[in-house]
Image (tube, rainbow, N blue to C red; front, side):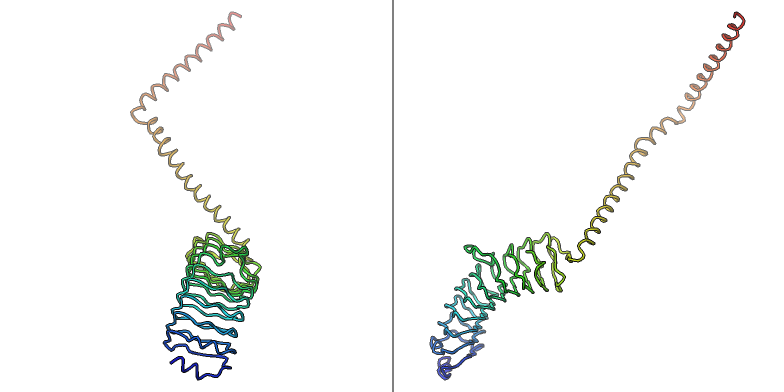
Length: 303
């Protein structure tokens, strides 16, 4: 029995591990441990948690059936509550640094604490990373890791300068924030609706942009080369179209217009008429020459 196990522990116990025990509940008597720092209760069948000791610093309650969390101790710095049935979050402690809430039914996150450096909220139903009612839509300044893939996000706010890893695949993102001033090393952003990319810093080592409308990664120090190649490809495209049009125009002018005219003009049936017309023209010219010579002689005699 869980009660017997807890009763057997001294009151100054600092760590309790009751994970993988097929528990359906944790008794309220856990609050008697005034110096408890770490509680492991993951991989059970818990539907709720009792009130937690105010001394608690780390809570691991993932892989249960928890639908709602109790009020979290103010000194909590690490919370792992992934793979549950949470649809709502209580207020997060100000000094919380690491948060795993993946694999739940969350549609909204509470305001993120300023000390948060690690956030995994993947596999939820999030439309935004921030509550709509908050004015400050920025990730915590110290955050270096964000995993928010498999949600319904359409945008991500400006990344903190210390951001190193961003996993935002399988969302509905249409653009990424500017990341040139960050030391980011990893970006996974496949299966979104991206049509363009910002300039990517040289520090980037791992990048996945496949299955977007545009997925060519533009390195910061090679942008001018890519622009030149795009311009050259455009000129080649125009030249290819011009060659196709030239051949088509030549075909139309010769085959459709000039060739039928020439064939009609020099057809054998018109050869005799052509020769007769040429003969009459020569006779007329000779006759004109003869008359001109007689007129000159008469003028010379009479003069």
